[in-house]
Image (cartoon, rainbow, N blue to C red; front, side, top):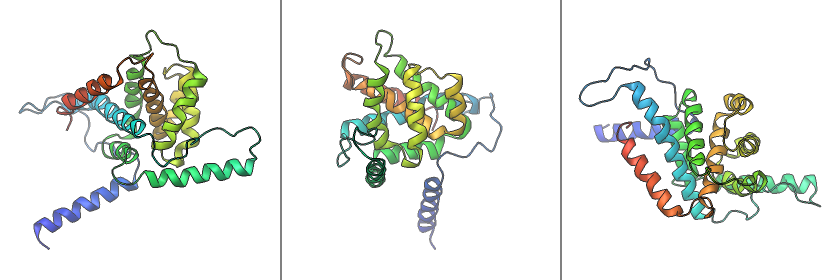
Length: 241
């Protein structure tokens, strides 16, 4: 096998390994505060900056998913059980939504972009920092706004259904409710559940913040805010990758 084929085969193998896991492996070397020379920052500094960059990348994918509007997805995706809807009908609807969402999460979709960020660069030990940075992005826009927790949850639910893997829906909905009630503050109970459900908590925080971007009374110019977020991710990403 030629070198080119071996490299392509290795890349395919690496991609398959990332898809098989949900979070990146922990670093094999201890984190160091010593700069590496040649303008390369220390692993500690890059790790700290990385928490922000990964959060911004995830949020940008969520914003892309929100702009796409979940084409082909049910309009009531992830809606709570409706009055008069039997338990059997509700279960059947959620199962149908799950199958549609899994189809939507094919290569190149915003859902896969989020999964790629998590599985490639975010180990479990970094998840609390990423969630904290996602919350910080939302808190930037909540200085003068007080969204109704119920309305906030209702608006964020479809976003969660579009991008969150169905296996994490139940835990993500619980964290969504808790984070909306706390106005994105990571309380002790939320932190405890984060330890057990890291992926679900990332998605819950991202969905709640994304909903804020769609409210002109909270984010006056969503396009400008999104551009500024992308510019930050690109600028600081140069120090991480």
